[in-house]
Image (cartoon, helix red, strand yellow):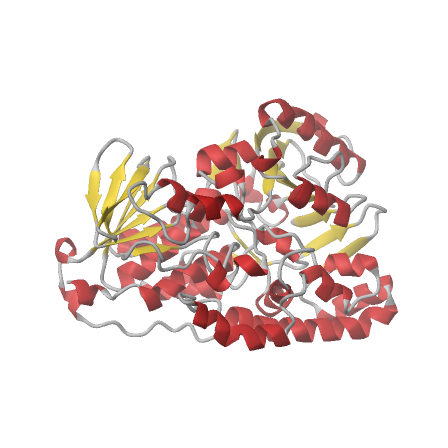
Length: 513
């Protein structure tokens, strides 16, 4: 495990009353914002978290209806030690507040012809699965996993929590990235190790979990395979929302405050230094430092109206590549489907062609690939007794494709329903007792994601590390960014690591007291 032990802070801030401490304002209460608030609180700041929605969580908020609980966003918890460290910063053990269960298997991948690959942390079982598809690929699997382990060591353990504030930081790591052939896509990396096309798919789809196209995302993201194998895939009992509530309690235990229904209209500056924020209702909140967990493109494009931006100009933001969006259908059934696992990936008839439609053509295709989440396979508390909670997620183009989701949402939901009926859940629609959908329009309107891109900027090499919005703003002093749109990127490990970077770039409260 990498060494993420926090350094012991100076004692002065701990002796100051809350009102006398330097004030940090955090915009947004996703995983990145909450983790940032905890780290700032541990370093002596008085912290206020501002959330425009009615409850915390951002993309990880929770929908509750008709006795069912639906996690709106991330459902796969990896690298749990990153969460454990946040509890330790507050003098607590995560296990005392959160019941985290390791999943076995991690997920099942079902191909269009009905063949299924069961993906787990059991190496013997994994080799047996690979042999069943193509025995000749076993040696390639060993080489791929060795490369994934080395990529994880460098790309995640060494660099995931390190700031990239200058181009020289990128130059320093360029030789190592070149040795790992990070310029290759994840798919090309997998294709170099597997001959079976289905196995190439199994070991290249992971970038989709963080908004990336496997045919374009840097090979550095091949690290996810090792990350899962080393630290497992987990589920927090009560849902991802239980983690959000646990983090909120940590902030409150530090003396920090969370305000929901508080929309930030702009970040105030004096000269080129952030001095606080103004809410949509006109309330001014002064701050010594400001941290934005809002969409990075939104932060620069909308929240700094009086600042002449030198790097993240409107023109640069317009040229940037944004991740795909998501169509998510949440539904509950009056019966249980015991044959369906916790995580299932249902692949359609096309892989490369579908991803080209989504990422390049921005075309809503007739076919689809789906991620089916059944949390009640592990956690019956997510639904009334005898019932199942589901969500099914389909990657779709962001709003740059021009789709009218007010008109297309219901036909697309019906298309997904037919696919589920034909594969895993025959006749299931007759059992549905509650239902709701989220479209790219919701990502734009509810989460203020530019173009409704569900993961912010697309994770390609030219938009990674120093090429991504830096955690310490290049435009304004005392402004910092965390979350999916900044370094190191999307996914729970990524956004929590973005908050870890703040320990290196935000002055300790003792320096401002």
